[in-house]
Length: 408
Image 1: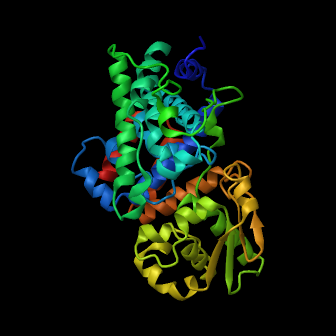
Image 2: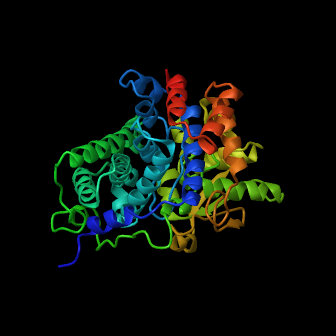
Image 3: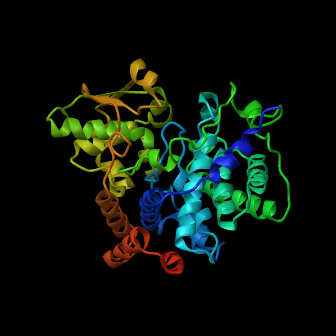
């Protein structure tokens, strides 16, 4: 009998996390803090602040509000908003231990996410489905549980995995609830496993397991081999749905080349149209999921920052949106999700800014922190404080205190 997949994953998660991997994790920590800072005055912040005393729990509601959270493009999920609150959830451990926990959390979440297919993505929210595994791995790492208990935690967390995409049809906070639920479920699973609550090791591949219920084929688990998956995660430079980023990026390049003139014609992959073909957005959330608005933003000389998706911006850019046509290009679809591509007025990009092939620098993430802190009403000094603690510090308690101050 072959070894259960979650047992194999647990063994992989026990591998050593290098200093280089922890340095990479620091960039993702700063990126997530930037997203939280920018969203701190949102409705989600108000909802979370009424419920939780911990800054990390409050922050779990905010990490993806601006649609600028990090993303693993082939797994089609956002690790940061789920993993960082879990990796920071234990107050009596060092920042170094939290960074290691985050690397393991990213690994588990992405490894499971890579097993999910197009059928799954059509109905289920992978950040929620795979997120419980990432949170369980991060929390289990903080607790120092062994491989057997880690398998139990992953199995029990996965036994309640899921989250339907239907929330996309309403202007609601369900997406934020998904992130919180995945984070909290994984933490609880790790603590219960540490207390002796056993779980199903064959939860993924079993006859009534996740694969049988949620995907069409036989999933294959991607395990730690050539390096931790956190190094393959993309950063998001634009305040919109990730499926709109290729179009924004191509439009920016076309504008720079002097080719962005009316009428505007977008060609991209099928999922981008499924999620973001929205010619007449009426809310900020809808604007972030509108290819038409994305192009209008760039045509108007903007940089796709949070202020470019507000109701004021929606009203101001109506005439430009009306000149945008979108369509699927089968060749671009065939290369997806390995490559998130788009063509705007004939100007094509195969990969998007922030992807491993077109990486952003540490200075870019620092600038993002400062921009979003300002958008969220924080002083520049607070942005600099976050940069110092996340990129260079070793004081976990100081970071705990900072986040609680931001969200009080």
